[in-house]
Image (cartoon, rainbow, N blue to C red):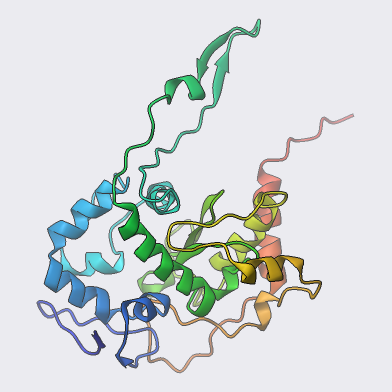
Length: 289
């Protein structure tokens, strides 16, 4: 396909950089968030097919049936989007989110168990070979695209960054064979952030969370992302991982390109401070003496 100018009903999306890559592959277009490619695919496939497929993988929210929808303009919750990615991680089998594992009476009697309630095997929502093709492209996002700051190195993974207009929302959704995690950054009053993109803060935040979540788990391959020697070498390497602040600011899919402003550079302390603040919200208040 060709990354170049495209217009639909007077709407002409641009890339974050303000430039076009020309002839490219779908993998490279996804990895570097070229906006014209999904728009051209939408014109060829049709918006209804895109909406139906999105719901098929487990996303329940309503998607707006207009052209900018293909670049993620519909208002969806982080849980809803992450559910769709869980289906990718599950080889195309539908994932259903839940929050309650057990309910017991005061005497310990079991009233409800998630294990008992979910005896039915998950439904194959999308053929595994199709999910494998998608996962392979999502792996390229991490290895060479906008999600490089989320690269764990030691385990097969896929993911995608996201940034909306005016920098009001930035997110990163990613998965391994064991865990699927979504990270969102934004202001409570919906005011713009300071040029924060999905690859700048959400991606390294995701990495810090997953370094803990994956600790002690044996890395495994995913549909389309096999486990090979390169991951074993990374896991065994004694050399410290490259700090995320040393990576060049990633190019993201926001349409805010063309400006002369200097991109914000994420520092490791930025992510650590945010995570510390989040975790402190859940700490029990110590009783006063």
